[in-house]
Amino acid sequence: MGVHPNTIRRWEREGKIKIVRIGGGHRRIPASEITRLMRKEAQISPVSSETDYEKGLRAFLDFVFTHCKNDHELVKRAIFVRDGYRCRICGSSEDLALKEKDPGLGIIEGNLMTICRKCSEFKEVSEKKEILEEKIEEQEKITRKKILNDLSPSGIAQRVAFGEILSAALVLNKFSLKELVVQSKSPEPVVRTFCERMEALGYLQKTESGYEIKIKVVE
Amino acid sequence: MTIWQEKLGKDYRLEIYLHVWGLERDPFTPDLPAPEAFVPSQREELIKLKEVLMEGRVAVLTGGLGMGKTAVCKFLTAALREENVVFQDPARQVIPVMIHGAAYRSAEEFLRAIILGLELDSNMDSVKMFEVLRKWGIEQKEKLAIIVDDVPESTANFKELGEFFRVLADLPGISLLLNGEEKRMENFLEKIPALKDRVYFRMKLRPLTLPEVRELLIARMRYCSREERDFMSGPITADGFQEIYKVSKGVPRQILAAASKALRLAAIWSSPINAQIVRMANRETLRERLAKIFLRKR
Image (tube, each protein chain N blue to C red):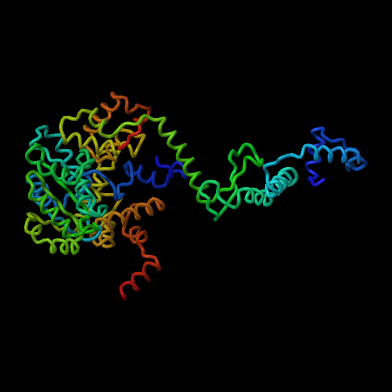
């Protein structure tokens, strides 16, 4: 008949063909069924857009994904053949690997694609970046200039001193007054003024052991 | 508490030893930031250095490796910042901007670093940035002290950089302190005679003497102590001071390293820091000795 055994099995499942099972699970197709099908085939003469190569490829993929799902090497080769040994993203033919579109779906033909290592690394990095950026976005972003303006320093000398303390505070993140004095190498009265003003503005939060920065500063 | 201490626990022997001697923390760490702990051996010269910075002139600070050049710069920065709190009159205030020369590759980067150090907007071209400094003496009442650490370590073109410093030195209200290793600094100044002529004061740091070593270590221990205490009779004994001086040859960085090593060994043996402990703690390993011999031959 010129069809793959799998097709016969599918037809059986779909009820298109009657099959007699003999002992040991072997299938036998009655001659009457074959003649019926041949006639039908000839009558309809399906106009398929698939070329022979595509047909063969489909059959091969069907076979691999129904019987040899666990043979990773074969699955990989099958997907490579389907994608023409080219990366789906950049079209490169070097350093190819298999990539699952959605890791939850498992080994299904539609879920797998060919990708080169460069693209796969780039994709991973960009995914990680996206996650990080999302996390950063959760915090409030304020420019350094705005903070220094909000602190309303009395003159340029105090502004510079506040800038120095702000840098030290951003390094420490959680700190006590004394730790900030040591880190910023600034006089204690200035550091105390800085902490009080920052707390009043809501940029710092007072904790049991000292202070904690509540904002994300961007340049 | 650092992450290291959280994961591995504190060095309890050292903690107990420090506690017994009434110390809050290790007094011999090289990055002790307090100006109080700075050795007051060269007081007159330091006073003069500060005066130069307040007058708007150029000073040069030289000295060998580990002689405390950067410590002097940090000390001056901290001292000027502290005085800004005391003197509320802007005409008496001097704003210190300390930049590390080794980090910058051109005069323009130095200029940007100075502008950033002043917390001004650096999103402009170099002409506008320079304009800010040019008008400093006219527009601002405060004076500006630019302290450049390790000038000859910079990878910038020396002639370009020297010319930049010379122009800065001529601007009103701006003073400069250049700091670098002695020979390299001399080399740097040789290339720009115009800058060399403008140097008003030179200070050379020399190795400390034995009484100065004692003074430095005691000042540091006092700074870290919990109560009023003169550390004359311990934890470092008289021969301990002598041995530290001998081992370090009076170089401040070596003094602190030797004292720190001795402190740790003394904590293990729970004995005062005497000559024997210092000698044991700072004994050269075979590898170090071999390296020294080979390096000297080459």
